[in-house]
Image 1 (cartoon, rainbow, N blue to C red):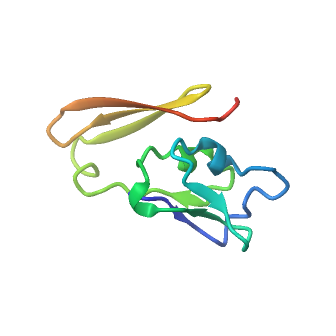
Image 2 (cartoon, rainbow, N blue to C red; image 1 turned 135 degrees about the vertical axis):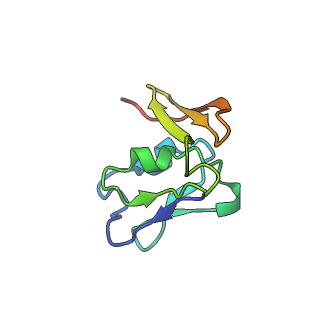
Length: 107
């Protein structure tokens, strides 16, 4: 589920020293390229925490949920904290898991 950046919407958080997605990524994978758009350094290293998706003020980042999570009673709920994002996951069998990731966002 690596992030997909829409280059038509992304402006790399123009005017900021560091883009919101760079600040939010706990794996330090996001960066703004020479084209002024955000990119993910290594898609296979993405933790799928979706912090970048939540942090993007232009809704330019999309994370696609796999089929196993995306039907029936499955849920994926983000809970933004001051310096973290917590994901509550319910799979197709009703099993619940919670994941908490630290980010560098200041709210």
